[in-house]
Length: 63
Image (cartoon, rainbow, N blue to C red):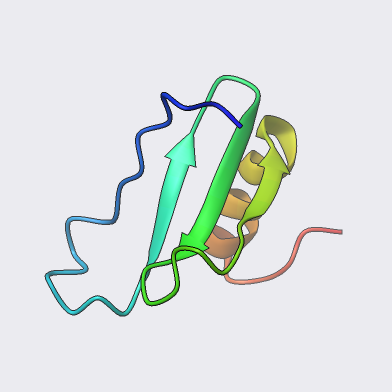
């Protein structure tokens, strides 16, 4: 694990503590739940994360 990861939330999430946090790196993106930060993370390659974002923006699923 990269100890220098910078976790962030969307500026639109406010202080509700009911969202996800992202740690975006050059080769991977990690995602975790703000309500359970120690509960594990979802790790995606940079390519998979870009495909995920494209699918979300398009309103569907990729592949």
